Length: 78
Image (cartoon, rainbow, N blue to C red):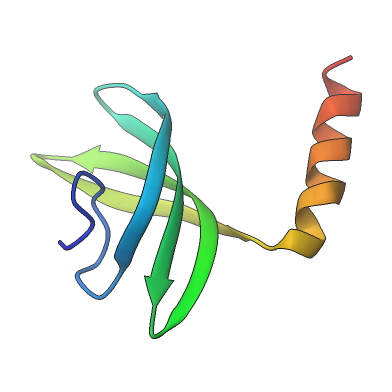
């Protein structure tokens, strides 16, 4: 793993990350990373399996999508 504190594949270079939630079984974080020369932001979810963390979901967030995601969530939280 090359992601420092985050359990990502060795080819993923984590630029920055923020843990949103972490328990003994589930870990959710937002990561800005570089993969094959391209920077992206993604929401990751890992599950603990035995002694290691395994990715169970990854959702890439683009600038175009962010406005719609933010608006939808804010409206639902009212």
